[in-house]
Image (tube, rainbow, N blue to C red):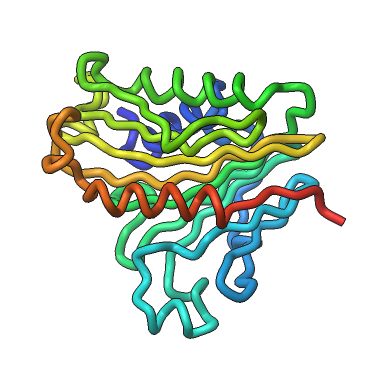
Length: 225
């Protein structure tokens, strides 16, 4: 019997990388390498620096504390070619979360960003009932500057027993350098819902829109010095 935590890692690994691996060969670190850089977080990994907007669930006082990292729960895994960071609100975990904020950096110099996005979309579609699955963009693409992507899953597939009766909404942004790609994403999980009715979603539509704008303007991938 696969535990809910292991299942969650498998689902996200398939979704984000398009590969059927769940941390295979990855080194688990006891301490996440993220640091706070003013009003952002900075992840340095696999030859890149990834700037991330602060978690949006923090209170104004927590955001201004200068000590955001101690206000969240972070999980980090990496190997020679990819790094995965996941951040949860205090009191939530990898096995039991309602909100998940994450990022993955992958060394794939020759892969077009559009192809990377297509692999992500395919991966997510494999975890959700087809009739309750939907994708939508927040704006238009401009070359490699891809618009943020939204995903709604009104209910997970029946064979994902640990997720029975649940669904999720997600927003993600995509970024590329000459050496690799990154996805920055946030997921909200709750009871199964009607994807055609935003009032039933586990996150309000205006919150999703705001977060999409933040991930577009506030996330940035650059080659490390």
